[in-house]
Length: 221
Ligand code: SF4
Image (cartoon, rainbow, N blue to C red; front, side):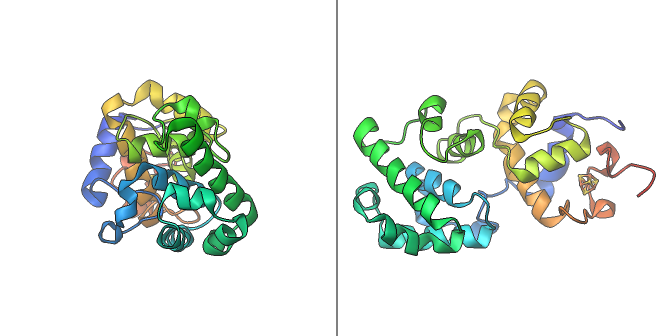
């Protein structure tokens, strides 16, 4: 292990490059659509983002919310209709079924208001800790660490955590990162993973945290 793993220092070095970061699936702040101000839509977009690329999430989300702009419309739509609207995001049968089911749960069990409670979110189909934390952080603005593939990979490369899966990464980050920075972790590391710390070929010589990073500082690079 090399350097200082101070998460405050690491995030401070990333912030000037990426600002406050952006929500996953939206790599450009200027493209932020109005529907992202609605927590239910943030949840559905996060479900759509599973196992697909940002541009596919964007197209599927825009199609869905343009054609079916309310929770009631999604809950009342045929799953086949939803499948056609979201097919760009992949796994349309599984995702359409989950999206319709989530809409019904929100309407029938929560009065049409997406709950802010982690357990309530986790009870919904296709909602795991990553998705629930994304919703808490990005839709409700509460402290939460959304560990996606970038956060899991980069945290381990740097040496901030030593974990086998995203849930372990979240637990370890919660122990070392101040709560007021939890939301920044995802926003900054997603952008870092898209721009500099690329999955197959990280640009370590351009990286502002190379001095803190186990991988970047390793002798055989
Ligand atoms: S030094 Fe390299 S591996 Fe480490 S965070 Fe930067 S780009 Fe990623």
